[in-house]
Image (cartoon, rainbow, N blue to C red; front, side, top):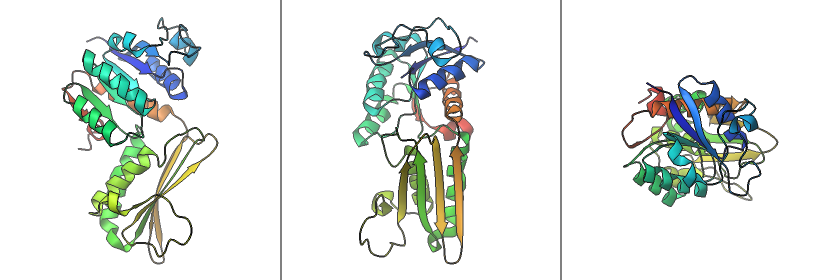
Length: 269
């Protein structure tokens, strides 16, 4: 069986370069396409050179439509509107897609679910193995503590992140709400300012911090009377996300159409 051929959308960004490095070092994976937005100064340059791994013979393109058919699966950590455009092309050509983009609205999520009926897609708010284990642990703790502890989610990211709360924080909220038999749409609290009144006992609060080059920190705080219980995950490098995403791409080999996430890949289901 040959190497899995992989394309990288947004190849010139921080995550794109890390993905190229990881694909290059991963046995069984081979970069065969990469692209950036049409106005990028990186177009035409070797993807391996801009990622710091040396020439790979893959020139960065400026149009996804010219590149996406050159690989079995595309890894996309870009922006919602860009990912949705790439989704249409992947569906048209019958190619797999690994989505690391966050911040989709309901209509965008619906388009992804519809496309997953025709092509295999992995979509996760976070590709870190540690974070996905955190989802499992947080759910178990919430189920045990029940309504006796207040639940707050605190997340911190670099100054360039454009959406808040992070996709990972929102996923944590969904996991906790399910474990506590609550509806996140009803109990989620995303901002507090002024006289807010006493805390709703069933609320799940979110706090977002943006600054510097923070890769990604997430904490679930369970606050009770006389004691607190915290679960924290801190990412010090994007490498962990890149390795998880490439692992997801390799896992998609010969998979049937469907919408998968990291729980499928890690065997948590």
